[in-house]
Image (cartoon, rainbow, N blue to C red; front, top):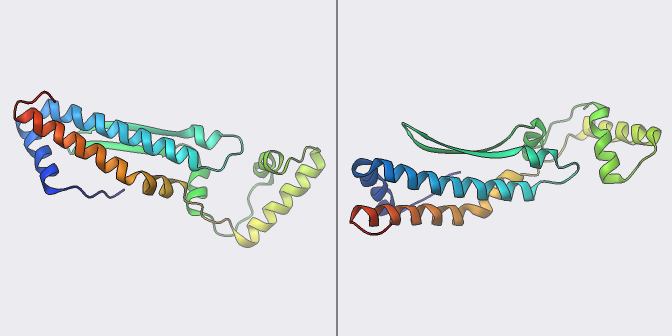
Amino acid sequence: MNLSMSLGDLQAFARGLRDAPEYTDRVLQEAMTEATLLVQREWQENLPRVSGLTARSITSDVASTPAGVLGVVSSSQPNALFLELGTRPHMPPVAAIEPWVKAVLGIREPKEVKRVAFLVARKIAREGTPAQHPMARAVQSTEGQVIAMFERAAAKVAAHLVGGDA
């Protein structure tokens, strides 16, 4: 995610990190936590639902490092990457498609589930899967809110530096 902020906001953070590093770090961590939780929620809401496993695998974390405050939103499920970027043609394991056949297509009879899952796998082997970009859409739809969070954080740091109640 690339964000644009005014030079004044960046200067407030630079002054804060120089003159009130603990306070500035805390304010930046609070803003980053709010931002990553927002992106996490939006990503989870953008995901197609089958079992909910991928959505539940999405987490966010914030860390203060010597290089600055780092926010990460990620998934531990490999299929999150496949949903985001799509796949080239390949033959997936049929068993991996069976839960999708049951949940999305509503097929319950075991032999029919296996048959339909095999047909879906063959189609993926011919065509791959399309990219759905749930993470990219989450970032795009929250960008303005995230920028506003950091602008408020910069104003809070600037007010603190001049003796305000921030």
